[in-house]
Image 1 (tube, rainbow, N blue to C red):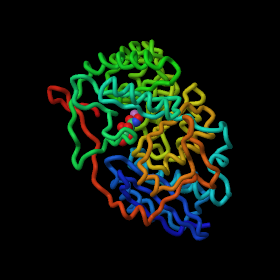
Image 2 (cartoon, helix red, strand yellow):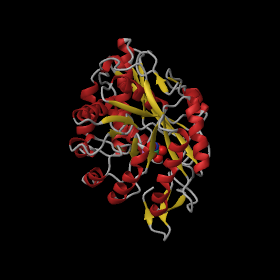
Image 3 (cartoon, rainbow, N blue to C red):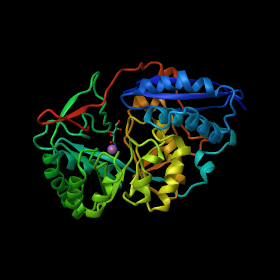
Image 4 (spheres, rainbow, N blue to C red):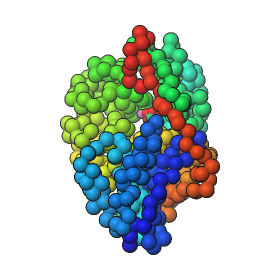
Length: 402
Ligand code: EZ4
Ligand code: CO
């Protein structure tokens, strides 16, 4: 079997998605997600100009060899653009392998370790009362695990608080929106938010919270401690994680479980975090961390150190990534949880898929491969629209992390 052609499909059914489709001489094809929010076209160029020419004529069965060909062969290693492009190729090749074998992807990885995949949804409110209403709504939909974010008094915008309740879309403008941030106001407010949630709903649900890389280590230690009475499932991205050492301080001061890694793209970004047991959940996922082949390596290292998986699953990761991640989740022995932000119905129509939500879990089908396809005709009706993620400034105008 040989790869005869590959193409990149850019479509904006509510938001931008970049999809790679790899074709073979036997008519079997595979697809992979290559979406990198706010920097989409850089990955398109990387694939079209530099990767696709090297794929033609190769045996699609040689997934491991092609992975290393693209990683080592580029000489320039790592980085989100490179690793998203490699991930798209890898995902498409696993899809082809499944279709050729007539087996769902989880069977190729080692078979099912569970019946379904526990997911968490996002309850976002402009204030505490709205956030409580959203928690009630997610609870009524059957979610066992709910991430809670709320607008902070005195700040006119807050990460996670959406215009549309089911689909949080931060890449909201043709040029980056500028938001104002105050860590002091946020830190004072968050424990009150969780106190109110526990007061109203008790301890029945898993509750999660995302700090979105905005604290210093000592602030994260403080907030982790303040949140201990509310028994969070995890506190996510409490500090920017380029400095892995920083987690030592946080870890020494709080028993609130820590999750990190949605923006990591290789195992080297979390090697110390894992081997020193500084985190509880690793958030890398298929599209931004080199595909199934590399994600598996990260998860298996994590397994040795009591770290579980918690794959990123925001709306800006396409249903193709979600489908592949779900097969991974069905297999991975040290599974923790899967994030699930829903896609719009326009997106779902462009990407027909065989997974579905029921009672707090995503249920995976047994279609050969990863079970997600792309309707190219429909995709063509939604041309690319430039969209950026916002930026943050402190109240005095200093540039800050978003
Ligand atoms: O802000 O995926 O946990 N989820 C997140 C996401 C990220 C977006 C950025 O593109 O932090 O909402
Ligand atoms: Co996050």
